[in-house]
Image (cartoon, rainbow over all chains, first blue to last red; front, side):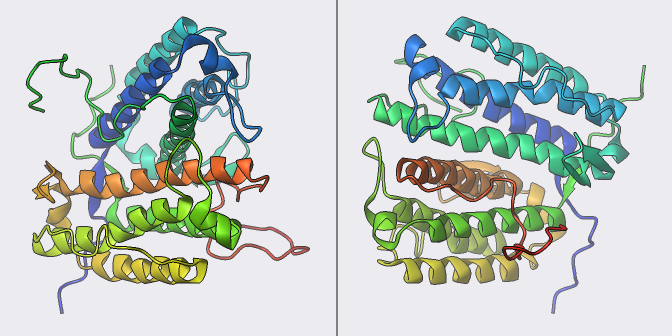
Length: 175
Length: 175
């Protein structure tokens, strides 16, 4: 028999979580870019929302969640508002949310991740659960964007490719 | 100025990660169940694989990954083999992988999560990255299953519902 693992064993540090999340955000940004400008806002399947609306939902969750985590003020401010109406605007809003995430995340106190909070009056759970929800929601909707791209005859970016800089065509790819 | 956070700050413990993963697996199981038996193996969009194949990929990654994590033996054994050919078989294989996950995860030593490993000769990364990849891959493909279900006119299970037991119709829902 091996010794039971200490229940406080770290799976993931806060810094590693942020890096993981930012990798997902880089990939989702590439998925936005892969859509033709008009199809981004118009194409959908099965009565679902176009990818621009899914991406807008994902990015609009960041600022209110960070405010809730840092100030325990859980109002939806900004979430659900009409989003950008063209690709350039969506990418700019995406990048702005990246800045909010990076600046806010660095200021979350260590003990905060395991504290319970009633997020937006919707659920009561440890803060880490609410943060994981945002990442899961992004991966979920991005997967739907992959279907849309395939239906449009466009090859999506590689799912495992999360680096900030991709090699240029012809360059050696040494990650 | 606040004090910088200790870089070893825990975002998520190993036990919490397993619980989070198992919640995702419960939801994906419900997505498999939501498909009509034949459409599960035949319906697809954009030239992609039917959901049964996506779910088979997801479940076949578990045993080889756990073997790699526990024994540093990274062979694909089982992965890529022909999967189950009906819904009952797929659900049985899904549940079997749940058992492998629970039994194996409990035996992963605390220090192992941050060790580097060359997973399947494909990438070298900390073990936690490889485990997160499996969860991300499941959420990604499940999101695609949601599109298939919507295209079939079927409402998918709620994305946020990860509990083992759902209330019966008419029961009070007190999570």
